[in-house]
Length: 252
Image (cartoon, rainbow, N blue to C red; front, side, top):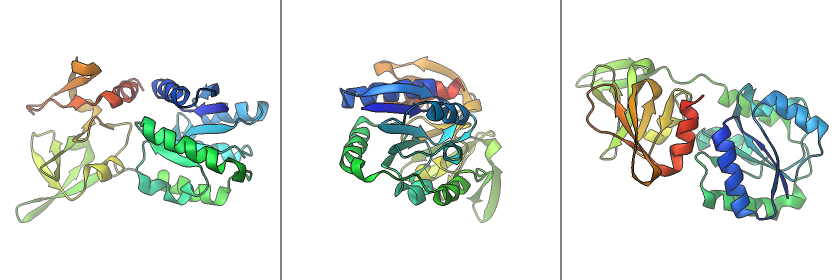
């Protein structure tokens, strides 16, 4: 089975290739491409692969722009850091999509779905539905959050928020003035509302801003421990399955 990987994060692309090869012994990764422009050029010059893994957000734009310049009939599995709600309109036109960091079991399920649906996927992807999703994904990220302080309501700029965290089934933001504010969002929802270039979900409980990190320390089991610049005493640990993507995020 011949596979094309379109992914702008080198470490993420390499990790995905290893996961694919561990699931499909006969798979051959033809190329790993990091931009819309290079993808269009490659697809015009080469026969279509059996399957394409395609990141949504590439170095020079959204991957849906590829379809505007070349006709693709290969089945596609999308990979993305965006939350599920933003992709429901497009799911019917792809084999599946995987949320980063990609889990091997989820990948195996997507590949099984590919094998089951392979004979049915022979038509180019409809540009009208792609345009709908592109508009959803191109919307600006949230700039402010409303919080309650007693009987008062306060608007906090995202630039003032060092990190978001969950505790006792509630979600909080921690600001530059070393205060915590309760939010009416789950951490999963916030992860889809803030710019992924600025904030990274290091584990189930913490979503951190890149400027908030004072130090990164090697920890047990190939994990990383973070120290914040302010007086916050907790030191969150980057989950082992997110370390590679976290390093790639720092190296943008």
